[in-house]
Length: 378
Image (cartoon, rainbow, N blue to C red; front, side, top):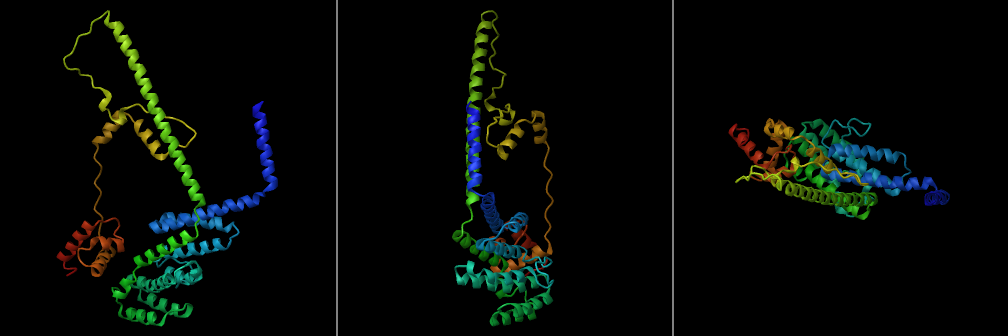
């Protein structure tokens, strides 16, 4: 009798909700949360330099934004996402965001940036990012050996944007001299641009928090982990109780059999106790509860279910040695630029400014010795 009553109550509650709140309004609120979550994720991937994850999240953000009536804050977030996408692909000269093929990603970012002036609390930060966009739009072209593209970028800035006169003269002189390693370009490096944009994002997210759905998901994951931990404790207790019962039954049987047949005593027992057995030798125990099992738990259970023969065979096989990564012309150039900027021996600082594809400071030092031996550097 209780069951039909509860169902009737649930139906009544649903009907009341449908009458008092329009489903379209609920959908709008939920879509806003998803849009905020995508925006925060996009900023996180940008700060971590995760290009693939950034592109996937950007596609999700665009899909949600196209079917959602944007408010003022949502319009700002959409502009910020477009700005970040152009910065993320700033060194890819073959990537186009505008209809004009001559407009490179950083040039497009410079045209968007003035529309975000109201989102920057610090005026000096706004001017700093503006100058970095101007300088790096030219510097990237020079790094790629595209002097004509650098010259066209300067002309484009003069026509389209408020280009400071002193900055224009300085960059024009550098382009005429083809000085890729000019100290002015090194002081306004691409890594400094990324760092400054990250500071801007931190300040914006602090002033405009968009983490409601993120916090709710975090709490859900934490509660799920707590339930899994409780399940593991219950499993251990059950296994201990079963082991105790089995040992008690065995002792009782041994006592009965000893009255009839007396076993021979061995001075040194050859039986190996299971005290030192690794976890992979023990039988797996799976506990099913209402919470989802984490990936780490699944991986642990899968490993426990493997046969001992398979584990022994895999332990004997040696992993193939990875071939050494080749030093490309671009990597050597980054190393030379870093030494020219910071000096010999400052390998950790050089690693922060340039991408060496996972190489360490020791590898940079060894490569520098090779370049000195081959007289490529003095």
